[in-house]
Image 1: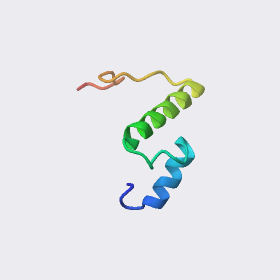
Image 2: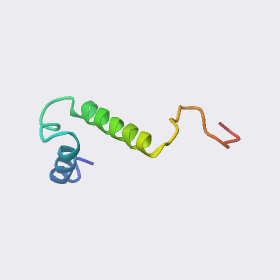
Image 3: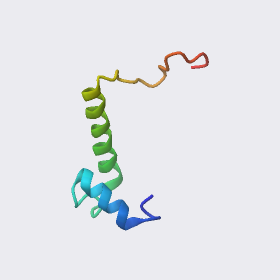
Length: 62
């Protein structure tokens, strides 16, 4: 995504993780960690059960 529109990507990533997030190396891992944390916080606030890989309720093939 960043290659397609780097200015917009950096702007949006900066709003979530701070303006310096994409300026240093290893930004992908740091940004992924911030996004993961944001999703966890949102799920907790909304009372959503934690999903574990391999557990798909109602899935016959899983």
